[in-house]
Image (cartoon, rainbow, N blue to C red; front, side, top):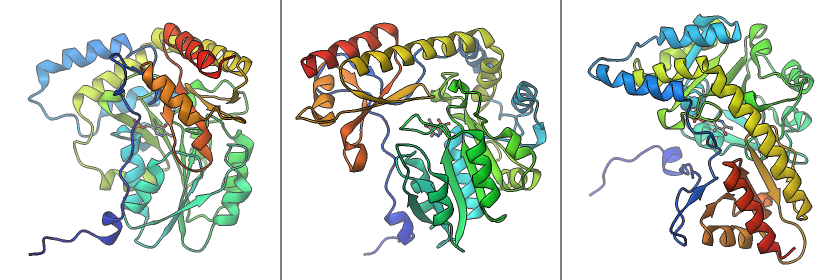
Length: 362
Ligand SMILES: *Cc1c(COP(=O)(O)O)cnc(C)c1O
């Protein structure tokens, strides 16, 4: 007997592999594999979430007006063109659903966010990987990969898992040279962490374009990954289109109120940013002293490269796991010799450096 058969492209789809949260080897696990907030959630967001429990019998505001107003006033943007989603992941998928026919092509960078090919293939699109250079997105390579069938370009800026970014001028150059009918998605999940003056998350470009979508998340700096809240910003036509393909009550009220509170909790935000900057620099410096290569990062994580002799990233990963520390290990391709480390609490950061020093025998 044959059951129902899914689309070929669904049968061939890979599932997303998330950062591990437990080790088999050690009793206690320290999870530094998913770029979660070292500072925990914003206390104001937590309080708003708890308070919302009294209203669990009510459907959420389908237009999430207060949340959109709060985002709009924070960034001085047009509330009507903000779309919210179940994590920014949902917005990436909505864009694929709305703009890709089966067989259409979408581009994404090598060594980038693994959700992109999954989102593309989930609607029958053809995912085209574009080579990067020096762990950084390469605009010329993207332009060279555009064909008649290209409909979407995904660009994480700053990029995950490499931590690198493209300056505003490069994004501008990319946008200037792509056809009008190609949607440029600027995934700015780590925008808040950037401390370079030549960076722009995408708002300026959205304001004067008809083919740019910027996405943001509450999962990283604001520390409410569990609530799955993200948002996007685009021109009227794109935001209305995405609004049509989303579910009416896609964002739970608990996530809406927590998001509003998180945006108002500027004290937490400043503390978390200062903390991240300090420890990102500390980790970079101290791991470099051990002889490891650290890719310069503008995010809340760093990519560590193991080079030469017999000290491989795989072996380092095993060693750290045995001691209860979970980093992100990529067991294929050019990242095979890398580990991605999320900035953790101060004692955790110190312990990782101590363990790696012992592992390397330096
Ligand atoms: C973490 C991350 C996101 C955010 O995902 P959410 O669905 O909002 O939790 C998006 N893009 C990149 C590149 C990320 O690393």
